[in-house]
Image 1: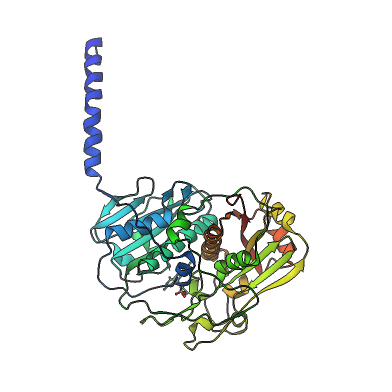
Image 2: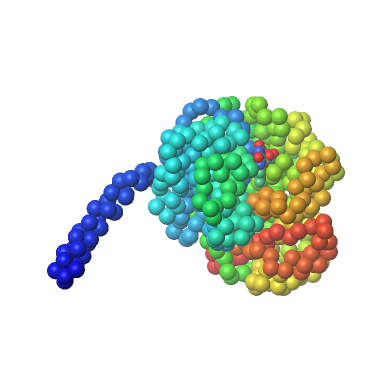
Length: 432
Ligand SMILES: Cc1cc2nc3c(=O)[nH]c(=O)nc-3n(C[C@H](O)[C@H](O)[C@H](O)COP(=O)(O)O)c2cc1C
């Protein structure tokens, strides 16, 4: 080939480049999502209204609502993202009537993945199904599922505040959409309008030894927008602040849910996070300068086999924060997570109580292969603390536990019965 010919070929190749790009972008069907709505509901009200919905009407969801929910789930803000990522090893698929789309958070758009209606992969019929997968080349399974827990929590809170409904379900069936090899299906969340409208009755029938939750004037959108990472700790918190942040991790709602429901296991009093099989197997410990405390959301739960929330009569919630050990142990926690949180005014640790994942006569989810389910729950719980901290102009960060043994020794718990999952440390850096 002579020089002239090479030059002609190079020029032709360069000229053809934009045409190729153009052709590709035309093939790629994309839905640019409108700007998300501002959700004005206070964060605490949204947390108290979190519940699972399984029966939907046929009415479609508006693109504006879908945009709001996807942004809340995993979108970008001026400070970062709407969740704390360990590795951001999660991808969201959106299954609609005409096809399966991938949510692109950076461009806040839906990109067509596959044409066709695959919504029947879900346990519950709804106009939209949100499929959440773990990208195993980007992060470890359990921590990625904690990220999915935070995402799921945002889907619950945003959907509910928009008068829509959703439920976290195990989503292995999502594989039938044909996923790339590195993606593992984890969760499917149907999304739709309710067949029967919400009927929440405010009834804070609560007996407790800590201050009651106050509704802040921080909206869900404001809290999500303000979620920044805190690396600087120090200062003191009031009893109200401590109690409210601890409550947000696993507490009971002040509302009773009388929404008409065709699902057999309707809960009348929900908690701030969902739980697989409603087992609620986490123990929440709070660590301050003064000592170690255990949060008992309701004394009935450990005593009775049926969770109190299944009983349709108004029974009081007996909720306590109990001191289990004196002294300042924050350095020990710092050692366990390999981050210095020894001046954090409040540290929260979620511990899996394995016996509560294998109740007699019910499915046994205590095996390692099911651990991701409980990391989902711990991720949702920690995420609530991050959001609630913002209402007090505080910031917080969530950490994996590097030395589980150190935490077990500190709390005097045995390895065969307990598994420490996550640590959340609250800081005051935003307030200064
Ligand atoms: C990780 C996880 C998996 C779940 N899987 C299912 C499921 O497959 N099907 C279902 O109907 N509900 C599922 N749930 C929802 C729980 O049953 C529900 O959260 C629990 O009963 C409490 O009810 P509430 O969310 O209405 O307060 C799951 C929840 C979690 C956190």
